[in-house]
Image (spheres, rainbow, N blue to C red):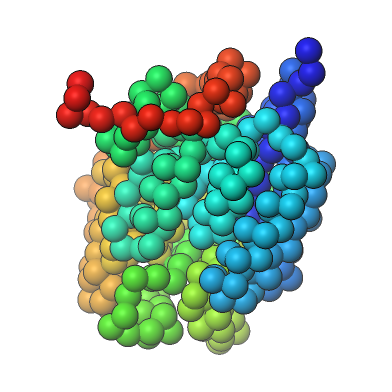
Length: 382
């Protein structure tokens, strides 16, 4: 019996970090043949050429011109991945999340009659177009691995058969438990950065559904608040490839060059990112990592505006509007005695049990080829 060919496509540093342990385990499994395809920002110098951080052997690199407009990158991705799937002939495609380029990959798989296993479906983020993209990928997929029970129920609500929707917990949270983190001395040497009395990790992505003002103006509000902080070191990680990232890139570089307490990175990589979370007081911005992974480190998250609105949140999340006054008020709450005491017992709702192995088990067990002709699961008829 031939090994089942599992094709995993990764397009960003964040998504690879989440899937890295799963990828490694599949690559070492005697019953599975891993086909790892790198694309998107992994192949862009502007975003740190994070392809070099991928530790598992890459089967194929596919450049989709990610630095151009999303519509162009998507069209290139559909064409190139359709050709690639014809060459690789995988048994199943595994994708994670809600990126526009991953939707293009899913479209190519659908046209290739290739079954899709989707990780992290059923989530909700009202403030960005990822909401629609995520649900589209869910409807093109045949196996579903969600990170909590509420999200599993939402995938079923979208008409997916409960027999093929599995709540496995978060791969990213599981990775924290399995990663030997750097000490403060090791990390400071690698980052060429010294932590201070107070420390914040800032990640701010473009708000893709905002029309009332530009990305630069939105981000400058946060920078104005950060400028007022005393005895605080700031580490910026640069944004993703959504429209408007150029403005945020430039503002980060300018701020870091003018403020001795700040430094910036295109990509920290999973090890340095998780290691950094050990020594900061909070994640600040609008990244999903502040919602999903940060609570496991018993630190706060200052979640700005509605980019992540809709996600299940731990008590460690402080939500605020994107105004200087609200951001400074949230930071004041972060350092309050009451909030710091609460952090000691905070629970992360996204912790699963043996997440990667459970995904692999289902990939082996289920004959996904028999699921190509899907029947809408109608809750009203049950």
